[in-house]
Image 1 (cartoon, protein in one colour):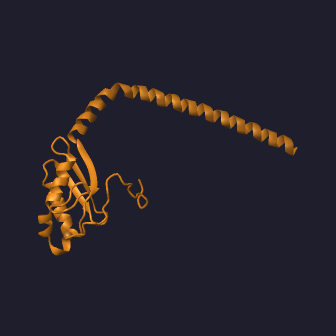
Image 2 (cartoon, helix red, strand yellow):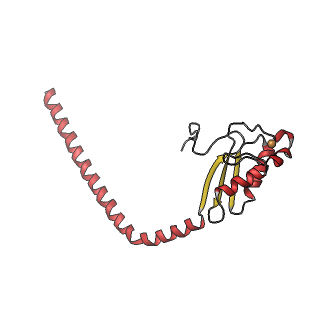
Image 3 (tube, helix red, strand yellow):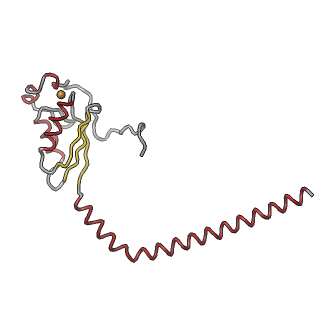
Length: 162
Ligand SMILES: [Cu+2]
């Protein structure tokens, strides 16, 4: 008795499996039908996307810059922002690193390095201007051998989700 009951249950499971497959195929076919309908309007969408990305043709860059404090942050960011084409600049006091966003049809990375160096601060590519450094407030006269975050180094993503 027990054996035949088990057998019956097994058959039922097979039936369920088959109907799941059928439902899945219908779902796939429906999805395909929807996709082919969407293709007709695709061209229009692509044109719109290109226009938007041309407007937002910003290059994001981050590189090491030495400095000590909030006052350094102001000077460094002001120097970076003074370069025409720079949209935003954010220096991280802990990582000794700046994130800049700029229009690469108006300026390039070296112009930003040079502007920061002129204000007295070392970047990972250009040494800070010595005279400007001497004119910095005493607390801002950072150690020239200070570690700084260099571009290309792996970012630490362990403390936040992506
Ligand atoms: Cu400072």
